[in-house]
Image 1 (cartoon, rainbow, N blue to C red):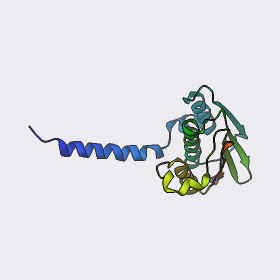
Image 2: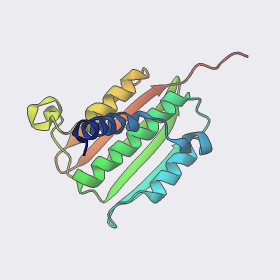
Image 3: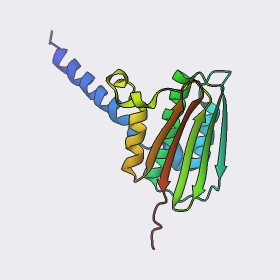
Image 4: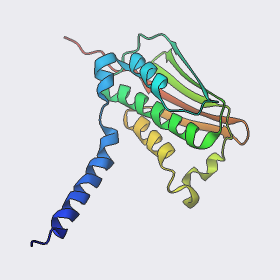
Length: 169
């Protein structure tokens, strides 16, 4: 009988690597449907508590975002809503995309518990990497990210993403 322990360790290590990088991949639904329909579809099928209402508003769907920026917007919405469902105890969350000069604004606002944003960089929050990951994704595409939260009054995540440059043919 052979010792399969080294092979088993290699498989586990490979699975961990795939698991680590898989969230960064572009969801196929973005290519199939486009950003707005993909978000609409996601928001309809998300598993959420029965007492949570999600409101989704788009102001001007004519937003030119390249694939990387669409992926960032989609992933930020996913992570923000996962945090709302897991931690906020909210009854309403609003997801708004607004076209502005030079880009778009994405806001995700809930009426939940809120938290002290000063804790984001503290050792107590070292295993809560969702907000940090959102910030990093947004900044990697030249965007701006902010969090406003008040205990007992909810949290608003605001993301500004610049338009993609139109490609000349």
